[in-house]
Amino acid sequence: MKTPHGKSKQPVYQRNSLGMDPAVYSQLLKKLDLEHQDTADPTNPTRIHTRLQYHEPYLDLVFESSDYSRRTITVAARNISRGGLSVLHSSFTYPGTSIRTTLNRINGKAFQATGTVVRCDHRGGVVHEIGIRFDNPIIVQEYIRPDIMQCIRSHELVKPTELDKSLLVVGNDKNIIPLLRQYLMQTNVKYAFAENAEQALQRKPEAHDMVLCCLEIDEMTGPEFTRVLRSKMYTKPILLIGPHASESTSNQVRLSSADAFIPTPINEKDLLCALGEYMLSIWDNQILQSIRKHHAAQTGDALRTELAKHAILLDQHIRTSDPVQVFGTCNKIRSLAPLLDLPKLREIAQEVADSIAESGDINPHLPALQDIKAMCVDRSSAA
Image 1 (spheres, rainbow, N blue to C red):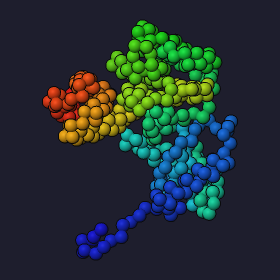
Image 2 (cartoon, rainbow, N blue to C red; image 1 turned 90 degrees about the horizontal axis):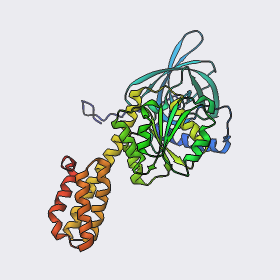
Image 3 (spheres, rainbow, N blue to C red; image 1 turned 180 degrees about the horizontal axis):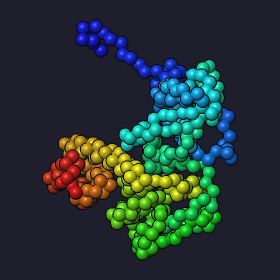
Image 4 (cartoon, helix red, strand yellow; image 1 turned 60 degrees about the horizontal axis):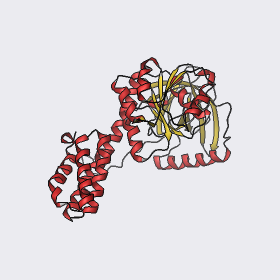
């Protein structure tokens, strides 16, 4: 980097109170996580909020002491929960100290969080871990947004009697529905069951606070039914439940505008925590919509990139006149097309793949193959 006078200027590196850059900070987090695994009690009956990774090496904290004096210190964040924040600092801090900090939401909007220091543990050397309890719980999904297939559980424990909203359960999976009935009976949830999409629509989903839908529900999939409900302006939470999905099904879930995926087999605690995520927190509809759009946009971008790569591969296979490779690539394009709402591309890719499978000859299909290549890049013509 050059100054206006042509001299080299050393870049200025930001530091937290520990004097750590991101690389050293990352190593410290790994060390602390390993130590935690060795000493942690897997069943902590006093913890009600799950701690989730929140790695921010430069978080400004405003410490407010009893005499109302204030000082701002840059610390390193370790994890976050609905109820509080854990940070790493270079010195001891007295419990009871008031804290103020700015948390950046994923949508770009800042939030002024206030809280109180409830613990300060020495972690070795100058490293102290400070536990902060927020004055008011937050919705962690505003700050952490993992893959929808990795369902966030911000409630460590949920009492069955705390759940008292209404739920519509859709599906007839014999490995899932009986367990759901058993678990829901212990709650105050007002629930109804529908075996398929038709029954579910007859039960008026809009009258329920939430929908829990199996991945497969007879005539359509859970993601397809989710899109049906969204098209009918159902804006409340929809959770999908089923066995660990294939990559194709996972992408369907990500693009469906569902709010969470619950993998099976499931136990009572997992179900209650998943329901509690939406029944016990006050969700703003704009936040829900923002998270859904984020999942769909990320997945859509990744799939469009993959589709463009298949177009390049298809061109290479056409040049080498390799019918086996052309068939395989057309099949991959066919499977991606419906996920991106490209029915015309799916239809042509299916027809060409079927014909090549029968004849083993790509020459009669060269014009169609050129069309497929073009549609993979210019998707407006493939819809």
